[in-house]
Length: 390
Image 1 (cartoon, rainbow, N blue to C red):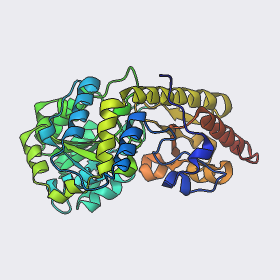
Image 2: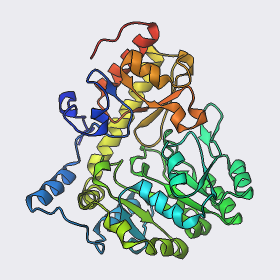
Image 3: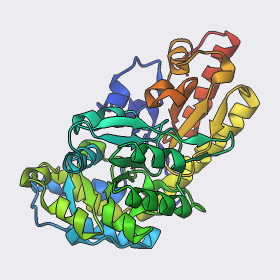
Image 4: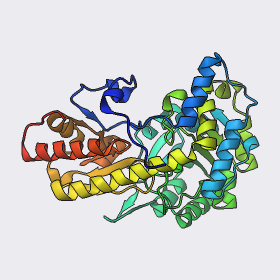
């Protein structure tokens, strides 16, 4: 199949999700991480079949078919076969993070996060009783990397563990094997843990390598727990299914100690759709990643041509682009200016932490026409021209 094509804008505006209900119809919504693409055909089919048979009840906690489909996908994509008996489900990745941390920290313990990073991380830690310890990523102007020495110092000073974002949102950064091995050695030496949010991993771009944290060392397998889901890869956030994944006995014990209700809250439609996506939606996923890559290249070229004061930090996974807009003079939160003057809704850079000042995140899981229109609007706003809907 060719690249996945986004739904027409009139169809998209009939959706009832937050992406399409937050702003007026003249705004291009390119903020929250929802795709504009239609569902993968196998997922559409399985959901229609469930509705036809009235299959809208509770999940069967012994159903491992989704975990098995994910394991088979992971083996093909990453050379890793997580064991279904070391895996369980819940509603979403945020719940995986919070429920894991509640069992790994005592109230007030510090946990390292690495801004600029997914904004809910700043709230999920307090929800779990932990304290946020920021160790910003290193940025040499050409690429980002973990500050391993800074993480070591934070753990030596009392932080209990690390909440890793991998691939890293908002950057689409894939942490390389050597960095992950080094992280695992540091965490092991300090007696800590790692909870690795790997939700964007299935959207790794061709020619790039995603390395699951639980594969990098014996230490990582002992102290690590991974959060996985099909919700970003297959646009299933509203259906509520995610995986706790362990590889060692200690974290498998944590998973097995969870209250039954944590699994019972899994969405049945989410479980069905997740199994169908990982088992039968791989061709659609590859075509979707190709469409995303084309949009990344399109945006990069248009900015160079029409708005050279702005810079895209190109992602290697996912469909989110990190924009350095400091050259536009739009202040610490340029998304505010973009919304008011260009009628383009971007994600606010400062919500990703202090390194996000002067930046914004853009969603590229859309049609090429949307990318073209967004750049035209932003360029017109920078030139002081009025914005005409289009």
